[in-house]
Image 1 (tube, one colour):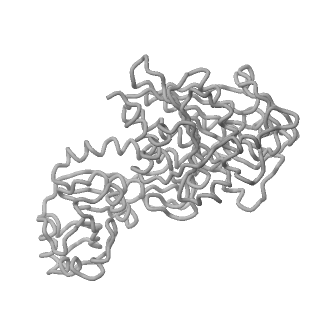
Image 2 (cartoon, helix red, strand yellow):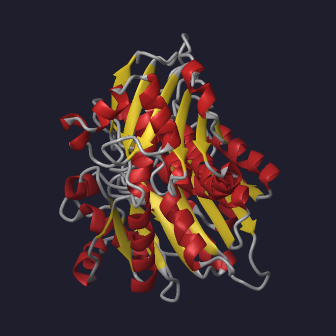
Length: 490
């Protein structure tokens, strides 16, 4: 759906610099030209490059930021873009440098001179992520950016280092495409079909239809979707890249393709954003795609519950009582607290069928988490310190904001129902925590588990460092790293 920019790694011949068309970008650190390419560019521009590097503006640049010389004399290029990046820069700074280049891509293409910079692969990763654009539904298609050639000293070595990152980027793009799609396009049928197509990558994909879900007792999930014309489904994706006797790690995603709130209908203002209420399922799908593309040496199963929450004569009502797959009965206080009903059954099914070594679920679950953490951090809830700390470490390493939230008996006590075992909504106070406590009721004590509330991070109204406004793909990078570092066979 999206059109990622083409990136190539090549050696550089300084003799071609005078006739290079498009744009030239140069990574630099010192206040004067030091590399062969920089010295050649400085000579061609009659010292303009050195003056720019030693300018006050250049001295104030943060790592990864840049300044531009437009239509430089002595060059055929339209612009010379200088990006400050120390040789000992962090991966985050290197990705920022790539993103800076991506913001100024044109159809004429870019020559990015990185030469022997040790973070060249990370620069390419940041460039690819930020160059993403979602425009399949626009009548006037924007011109695709030209190819980016990254000039490095050892192109084969850098390309090999960048290959796993390219798999991660494709997973992020897949997630963003899913989250950005409107609900009339991404129905439950269409969503399931896109996941089934990943069998071509080596994933085992199974689609459970409503009759099967009914036989399994997934009444909590089925109740959410009973007012929609789109059939509810559960899609199971298995990647078996580890030892045969190794239990899988499980990822579970909420896939509400559109959430009106049901009978407890949402206000009209902003309801159009509820196309992103399948963000948890989108992230799970993106991670599974990444694992397959890079041939991860781990066993991972991804399960997503796909439903649509609509008001209809058949729709679930406030006050209804449903029996979950676990056997726990739930009084539906608010039909807009539907995601936890979907997850309850899928979490239980994942444990009953796969006996996972650990489990993480993702969901755009509560507006309350945005009140608590804004759009900078995902809320993390867990019953296991080791798994939680490992995830937080992975998220920190990838620059994906995450913050652990409390849980406890006092919050759990709020789930008591007058007519059933538990309620699905406990009011405004501690809303994201009581939602997590609800999910905890469907996690076995022996299963290490984290719940990630991505309501504030799945989709943004403004650009971020590595993504244009819209879907971010948050979590694909962090979960891929967690699986790589903690669960892959060494």
